[in-house]
Length: 499
Image (cartoon, rainbow, N blue to C red; front, side, top):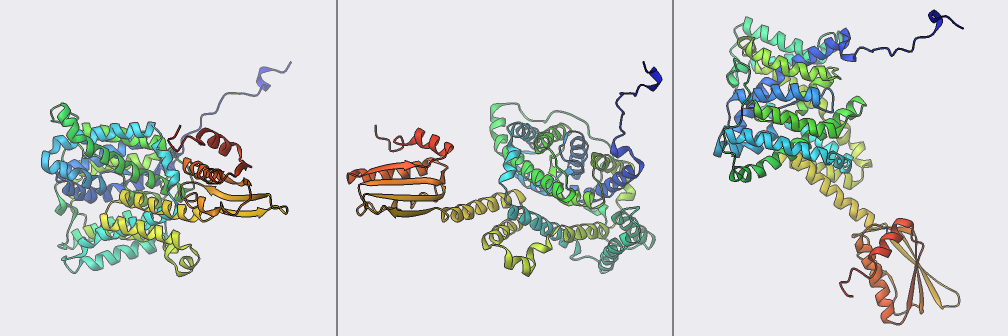
């Protein structure tokens, strides 16, 4: 019998999480710091759009990032206060005040949890690739357009500062990647402008930073049915826009990192994060695509970067507020310009690509980009692009259904071979493809090469049989596969409304 000393141990070995390794942790923390710096002016801007104090947007960015880092489904994705959410809640905040806005955020979060539990994330599979490309390109354009106001009516020195920051971020990674180039660029430009006493727009010019942490509490609204009726439309819009942007961003990060994430968990996580944000008096939010791109491009891949971004955001505001206020907007503008150029899918608009791409695919991409840029709402553009893609797909597939007739030599029977996908679009002209008057008395419709998808197709076949029956001719339908046969047997003769 072997001794106990020679018996192999079957104890499970505890592996240290990846984000705890020094190299990964350094990358995640430094990337989170860059994101936190980039979040500050964005959150202040979105607060202004929503018509609330800048601290409301900063609080939202803090709570969203920290909570989603724990409960979200997509590691390394940044969630915070966003422009799309600000546009949804702005009318409510303007007309009814902050209390109603906060209540809307909480109700919208509850709706997101319900939608996530119902599997709304699975609808992402119906978003065509051309819509995704349009989404990315529109996002890049919006990020760039958001920087343009920062370059108008500013001191001339801002332009060389932006150019220098861009050059630093482009060429520095060729020498070292130990520290993110955007972080070095922000520190360098801040030191230069402060040391040289340059009068340029700074973060502090955008609004006052909070001096204390947010305190939880209930929204100051009457808890009545009238209040719920008022909030419900805004909350539903809030939930849908937030989920749309978050799920599209998660899918984009999946593609960039060659990893998969749980979209259902992300949907529920967004809801939880918004509920927490509402109780802390924030304006709510969703995934931030620009900051997420900064995070991913800097090499972040875990939840630590997201958590760090949220925590450091408050640390920077509360502890280092006076120093952060002196960061020149030129540095952050340069970071976002570089992000916009890196995000845009230049291959999708290359002449060689456009020549090979089907016109319908290009049309869907252009529609998505145009509507997003026109409305500044990514969700509306994605829905419009997806509907355009659906219409083009339906038209394309409709023309694939074919009907071929073969008359027996003795002339007593004709066989019609129907091929393709039979659904509402392709079955509309099916009835007109048969020679009711000229055919012999025995008609066979062979559906071996076809598939019945909906009631419209069954109704079309019923109409064909009725037209032949009116002329005293018999019709036999053969070749149905199992799902088609089941649908035909269930609906045939039941769609005319006649008993």
